[in-house]
Image (spheres, rainbow, N blue to C red):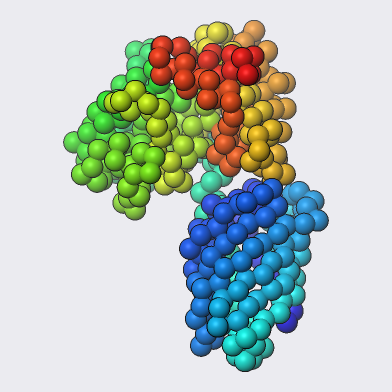
Length: 434
């Protein structure tokens, strides 16, 4: 049986290619997928419950990627067995073409079926297959789009006129609910920078309340207090504004605030993250953690151990990257946070989980960061360098989200658990020690 079709996706080609190789995106997009695990750089194992005509079955099998030519094309092949229902095996050639308004995806499938499936009839199998493909691409467009960085109108991430070297006002087109909690770094709030975010919201009629988030690495107490703040104010939107600590605290609080449980209940192998969550926007004011695009949110538990709340549910609905918000960062913090981003990109492209699709992000991040960090430290008002650092940090955040970090971060988290050392500095020391 052969099937060929074309799908248009309103997403950049690099993002589409990376998402097609992302186990989490695929698991959430494939109809009936119960599990999907990447077992090597080019191999996945999956369990999928499917209905083909009158036949229902649970298929278990493996999928291999070959002929990789990122971000243009690859071949995917595999075989699944469904017990008495039979088996299915075959391959598909996938080609991506960049267009002005997104990406054209062309695929050609050549498949064989056996057992009861073979008795269903080619026409019915083809109809069911096309229906499943339609459901997959509909879900894929949504899931892949959520993971991509977005920039609000008026907040250019890199190309900002030099004359505009001051914080920009917030200009976003997301719904604003009247009760709004804003998480900010204490130092930034005292400097008045947050007014550029808060004032337009208040002028639009939003009831804005300020929570001053700690600049230190988050502790369990910090997360619980922030969560209670969001709950008590019945927040309809959380804006996490600041460095990685403020964003992590804001993301975790927004994710679990509509439950009656403490945030710690959801850490590690705890309870599943809730479906009902407060919408959130992340606005980084440092170029380092990449927290704005990461689904890992780390804090120190009451027992002193480093733990995390993990899941795509913690990612924000909108990210705003504005280099004008980073120009007041002192040179030493610019260097420390920049090196943190550099190590994210380095470790995600060299550890045992790395793969070619994720290298699109980590390698691009390395290029941006190495080309801009020195200038950002030496010339704090250099918006081109600041913008490149923000974008490099964001890409590096996506890279570690896909492939994790390495030994330098193990050392860093251990140091932070016993002493108040800045995460960026501790991480920068990691490659030297390891």
